[in-house]
Structures are given as C-alpha cells and as structure tokens.
Image 1 (cartoon, rainbow, N blue to C red):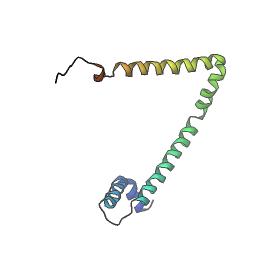
Image 2: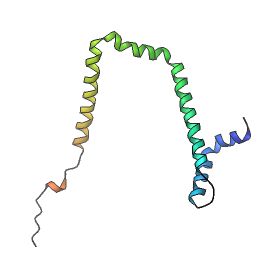
Image 3: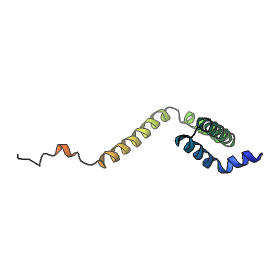
Image 4: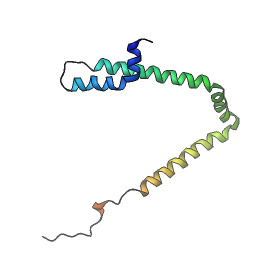
Length: 112
C-alpha cells in the first residue's frame, strides 16, 4: 500500500473535514471531488460488506428463504398478523406519549 493510501486510511476524516472547511471559508479549493471520492470508497466498502456477508451466510439465507415454503399458507397469514400487531403496539405507545393539545382547552377566559 502506498504511503498516500495509508495516510488517507488513517486520517481520511480529518482530510475531508479540512477540505470542506477550506471551501466553506472561501478558499479556492474544491471540496466536491473529495466528497465524491469518499462516496465512492463508502460504496465499495458497503458492496464488499454485503458480498462477504452473503458468502458467509449463504446456507443460512437459503434456509430462511425455504422456511416460509415449509409453512405454506400459514406463513401468508402469520406474517401480516405479526407485522400488524407490531405496528399497532408501536402506534398505541406513540399516541399515549403525546402531550395534550393546549388549543382544545378553553378553561382560560380572557376578559378585555
């Protein structure tokens, strides 16, 4: 690995911050190529991560995909019921934590 690559791997965040800071400060230093470079590296990293995970767990993924086939029609009913129950619980929890609306209370009468 070249010294430049090693430097960018160990100090890439600082280099990106300084490039964007220099552009925002008004210096004639374009930050867009640096941002595109970081975006390309992150895309390659995430693609490689999914390939490695898929290669590592391909047997387990085949088993998980085949499991609903073993259940048959029960899976078609069970999955939407489970998702609906989860969403219903989440909505009820969120609505119970909502503060009361102050515009509905008319207990304060202002006499002018």
